[in-house]
Length: 226
Image (cartoon, rainbow, N blue to C red; front, side, top):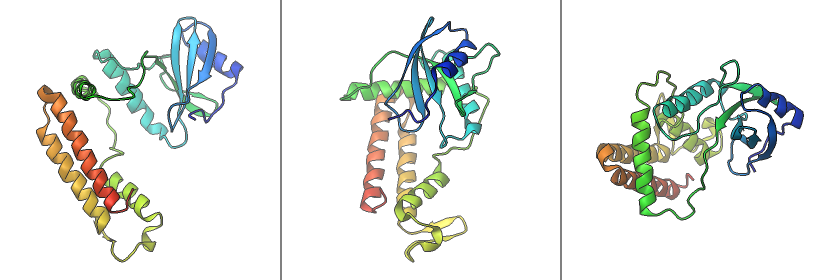
């Protein structure tokens, strides 16, 4: 269930009225998703998607993500586009949560992916990288190596660093033990994957990334990390 924050009819109607979308006709919660609250709204000008960002999301990151979506859409990428209100704002507050409206894209998720779907993903990813050139905002990578170290260590130990077994120890920025070994394998494989990538061979790059991910996951499982 991905409706963690309830919004009243009146509160939502007032919120939508500040956009040039006409009146709110109906709305429903979206069950898919695990982190944020999502609603599908039907307005006089068509369907629109509402996201309320929950506590795990850093509000300081949202201008980057919303700005990137707008940048990609302007570059011609077929992606949801943030909708600005009458004052030009993309990010608002609703029911005590940061909130944004984005355009709704019709479609369904692929239940049984085939190789042709992997090729399409590779092509779309290449297009995203090309379209993203020139975007001015930056942010720290929340899935970078330092974040991997913290997250995997948390999964592996489930307790504070001072409680860790003697087999793993941290000295400055260097961690010794199975966590570091798995991270080193992940980095090695991802670098090999990146080296083999080119926009001209999107399908092969997508396949290589899947292969690298499988190896890293297997290594993690064998080390009892996930």
